Image (tube, rainbow, N blue to C red; front, top):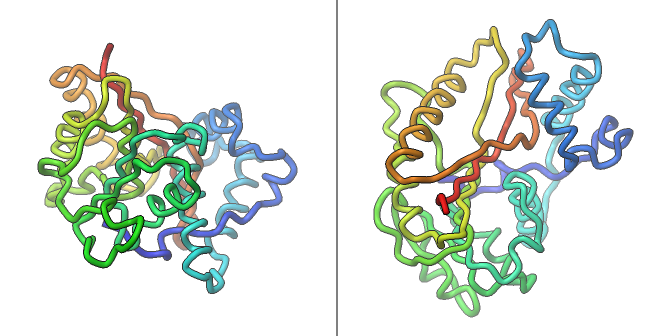
Length: 258
C-alpha cells in the first residue's frame, strides 16, 4: 500500500504544456502519447522528445515542504488526473478508495469539499481509531484481496495500490481484488485503476513488460468469467532513472456488461 506524500509530486506546468495550453487533458494529446510510446525510441517525433525532456526535469524537481492540507489537495488533484475523473463525476457518488493510505487524503478531501458524503477508504495500514469526527465511519482496515467490509459503490478506485506482479516470484494477485470489487460494484458502476504501464518497443523495462502481460491475461480471463467490459485510456508518460526510461501510464476502466 502507499500512504506517503513522496509518491505524489506537485503539478509543475512544463514549457511544452504552456505552449499547448492544458494539452494533458486533451484526448488528442493523450492519443499522441499512446502512439509515440508504441514506436521505438529512434522513431519518436521531436515534439515527443521535447515532452520527455520536460517530464524528466519535472521528476528531478525538489519538493518543498507542504502543510498537511496542501498535501491533501495535491494528492486529490493527482487522483483526479490519474483516474481521468472530475469533481463533477464524483458528485454525490458512493466511492471506495482501495489502498487509500494511512492518512486517507483523497477521501478526506472528497468529504471536506462536500463532493460526496459517501466516500470510504480501505487499506491494510489504516488505524480506524485515529480518525475522528466526520471521518470516523469512513475508513476501514483490511486486505482488499478478501471480502470488502462495505458495498454498493458507483466508483471503486485505486492509485498505485492494485498492481500486477512484476516477476514470477511476485505474489500480488489483482484478479482476487477485482473479483471482490465486482461483488460490491453497482450495475452501472466503474472500477478505475491507475497506473497500468506500457513500455516502448526495444526497451530494458522487463518488469513493466511482465506486468503488462499479466494485466492482459487477467483482463482477458475476467471478461469471460465475470462478464465485464474494460478499456485502457492513456493519461501521461513517466520518465525516470539515469537512462531516462520512458513508459506510458494508463487508467484501467472496468464496467459490468449490461
